[in-house]
Image (cartoon, rainbow, N blue to C red; front, side, top):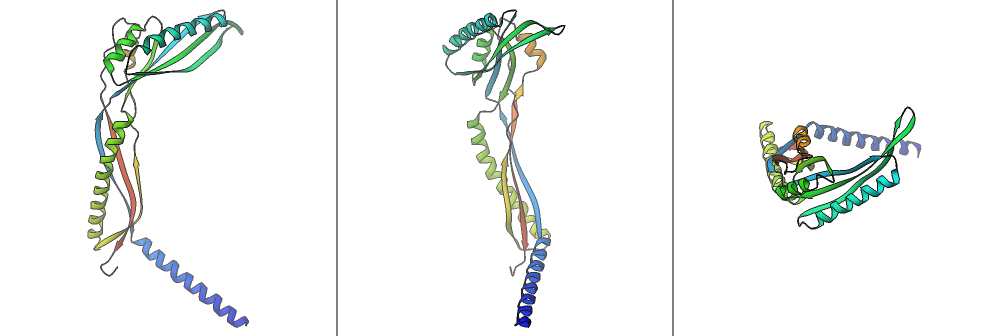
Length: 232
């Protein structure tokens, strides 16, 4: 019985070794590659961050003034179609001098989003007495990104398959088997206005000069193929 057990154990070890050897051989014929499809897309969304801020000795009164100003701003924005607004980052903190509280600063941010640049620029100019422009960035809307990525995905997959076929032929193989594949798309980076231009327009009574520019949207297909001979 002991001898039979040893024979069975030896058989399992041999089969495992053969399996590992086959896998190792297959690994030698696997190649990783990727294909990228890129398109330049015009930015179609402007996001402006405005801030209402008050400084003084009495934090309660400062908070009241900030709330009053923000209410005025929101009322004005609500009258204009096509602008999405929401408040963010309410802050109240002391300002120290010689180790003691000398004054307080209370502020609240407002984010305005619109696909109508000229309209939003005029709104910003109208609000310059109540708010300060903190940032203005251009980006691509989610709807446009989804539409562009759908087409880029098709292009990237076509490029990947063509590259895989070319590689197989160059290595003297007739075909390939797809072992692993992943599809990833980038998120376009928001394009900020130049700081100097932003500062010069932040307290201006006229609308800031806006140029949306373009952004790159890409889809990358990465994967591993196994080269096959005719008999495979």
